[in-house]
Image 1: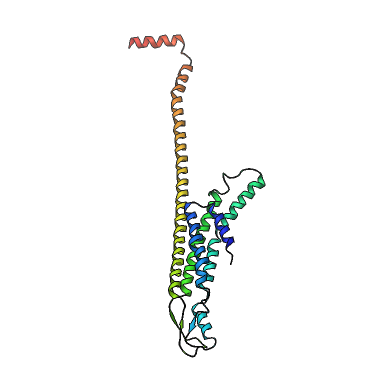
Image 2: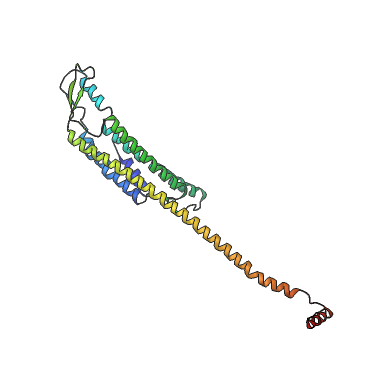
Length: 264
């Protein structure tokens, strides 16, 4: 199987990711994809041929192998890698849509088409949630299909056409179990990285919105205080103007008031 498309996808997503997202890309590419290609495929390559039972009844080995390994480990891991990496396409498509929109309108509509803000931020958060969900689904699927994360040396099978309970032996169980634990651990690490990135982005942009709202409130209160100060400052001046603009009393009325004041 050629994994070039997955490599190109991960390298494309790496351009639009923050620090934690780049660590996730490195873990998927180095500790999962390369380990799968170099080691895991070779270990499970001949698992069916090396599965042996202590009876040569025709069809017994095939039926027992299908019962204990309904899906090959390598096939399920390959499907997991593809499915977990697919949500990253949402981010790539959204950035491509932004670039096409700018080209269509022939003007700059965004600070940068790959900057995490607005709709692209929502798309990025959705992709993180989908990746976490898919990782958890595949871990549960592994556990249910193989009755845990262990590879036994011996399994007992009594399914027809086996005439009785037979012992079947799995090749290289210790080596397989080590790689199984390693791939499960890297899957859990990817879940932790996705959860950390999701929490960081939600906290970061929540604080950003909160600070913007506080700044607007402060600016609004300053504007109100400034207006009230101007009104308060203008009131005495208006009163003085009103007093000065009042017409003076006639002279004979003024003389009468002065005489009355002298008598008192």
